[in-house]
Length: 628
Image (cartoon, rainbow, N blue to C red):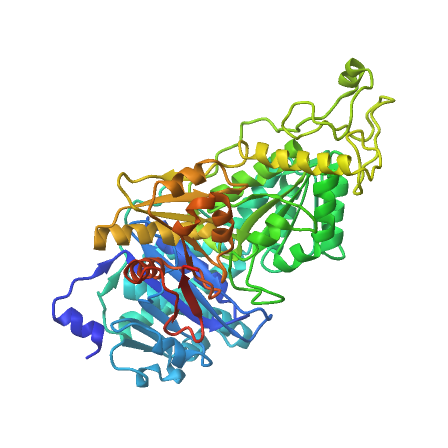
């Protein structure tokens, strides 16, 4: 008898609404729709759920995995341990099965013979090709319907309700009515086979609950697109690059639906010839008074360096969404990371610092979509938004977005009337309010004193060309003052202080989700209270120094090799920099909670020594915890 069925015979209870389903298929096989149906069906039963797609960077043929985590307590970060594996790929079946923990369930395509690999896993053999052939003689359609058959198999084994699967199929294929019936037939084929041929298992079950009522499922790129539209974006320029392309593609669809007036578009969306051209168009549009943005990934940001410096020095507004992926160079285009922190903060030569917003959720992607546009105009500078592949391309559960009610902030723009009051006495780069932010005019303002020269070269506060040392120093000092002012206006950190806690955590972006779960593990399993400082923007606010000062040790958790944010924090906190320790996860897979809690416990024991560990079943996926 298998390990799971042995456990059931021994009276071990079911694990209800807490399981991870891992589907291994081939890229280009059409499995994405089936996996979304499976995830949404669980969601519709009221169980909190998240979905993560790990796909190759080619078009078709290489392995792809989709992980669904259902958790009654609402934990949505990646969980490394797999409870239920669906093996459909001969290339990876042995490695997939070997990576399972004892007691897991494996559903596999009959020719793979996975049951011969181990004896401590419960195996369910399914003749998927035979079942699909019974549904259709069309070879291409058979491949697609095979995916829905495994949805039916999983549903029957763990208790997903058929009505919810049908509702999910209807939503998935909305507008494609002809596709609904064959997919429903495939679901039923899987359910019928499981009932007639597979032994019942009760180790992992899904049961209806009520924790998803009123919530939505959306990916971060779509949320950012909606936020930018609500923020009044009018010019969008982009060059396709994974994983950012879907942001502008989504925005095209939304703008066509909602920003057409009297049959005419009130926006311009342009696919540029490369990323440098894209940011050049953004800054040109911002100079002209349009709200403008682009989206890209790390390699595209690298190409944008020259224009980013121009935008900073000439003070031109624009927004750049960086959906981070693994680098350097081409790196791993379809894996996630947080490795562009230093690149975006310092992008360009000379003394440059860019305001960066860092969303951790799809809600913040929506909110920062408009907030970034406001800040770009308020501070007359390029604004970077650092998302990542995990947030941007994966599906996340969320409360519905709140309709924005705050008016759009255009910043210090001089009108014709204001110029009349000034009698022409103004300077484009003059700081009259002490905040480092000058006034500007927009092209076409009907006043003889509205015009000025926009300069990327040395200039004085009246925008006149200058190579005088004093003028240059005054200009860059004022730009630094502008960054200081931004501390009051960027999204503020979210701080959770625990009385008496000696350990503090700092994290940002999607690392927030595994860290929150890791804090729960440390408290629940070890009685360890910890405080938490979630960064949401650069520059750092004044609260950072106080947070580090009140704790004995502060662990900065991030997804890059070198601890880029931790190094910036060390520079910021000066005398307290010895308290900063790094917890670094950089396999390309999203960080998980157990990695963080184990790393912290090991570092507490060994006083911060450097260790290198490897994830089981992940090949040479190195991770490191370190205190330099």
